[in-house]
Image (cartoon, rainbow, N blue to C red; front, side):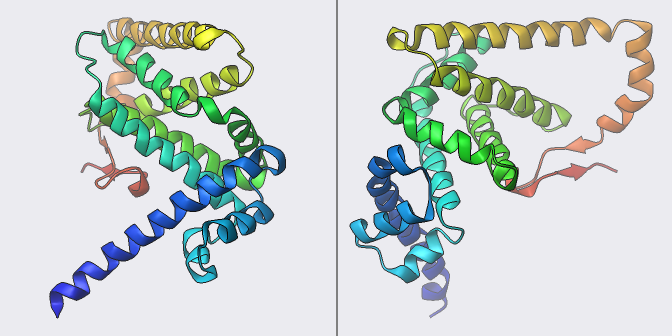
Length: 240
C-alpha cells in the first residue's frame, strides 16, 4: 500500500511530461503564425487529444507555459546530446562554445518559434520567466560540462553564460550564413571576451585594490554557497 502511494506522483509527472511533448509538437506549426498564445494552446490540446483537466495541469498559465515547455524540452535534449559527445579533446572555453552551438542546432528548424518566444519573454510580465529559462539553459550546460563549483563562482559562471547564450540567440535569429558560420564566430568572440575578463580578475588579485577587496567584500562572498537542490533552490546557502 505504501509502495503504491510513493509511486503515484512519479507516474503523474511522467503523464504530464508526455502530454507536454504531444501538445508542443502539435502547437509548433501554428506558433509560427500566431505565437505562443492561449488560442494556439487550445487548438494544440485538441489536436493532440489531451483532456482539458490534464491540459490545465501541464499548462496552468496558458501560452507562456507552452513556450516554457518548448524551451525545457530543448534543454533536456541538450543534456542528452552533450552526454553523448566526447568533448575531452577541446579546451574548456571551446567546450562551452560547442555546448551553445549544440543548443542552437537543436532549435535550428524552429527559428520563427524561437523568435516568437523571444518576443513573448521580452514583455515585462514574462521577463522573469524568460530570465529563469535562460538561467536553466546555462545551468544545464555547466552541469553537462562537469562544473563542481560550490561557492560564488557557481553563480558567476551561470550569469556570464546566460549573457553569452542570450546574445547568441538574438544574433542567430538574424544569421543567414551557411551552417551558422557567423553565429559560431560570434560565440567564439563573446567567450573570448569572458576569458579576458576572467584574466583581468585574476591579475587584479595581486594588486592593492584586489587585496583590499579580499579582506572586505571578498570575505562575505566566500560564505556564499550554491543551491542545495539546484537552481529552483535559489538563492542558495550562506555558510556561517
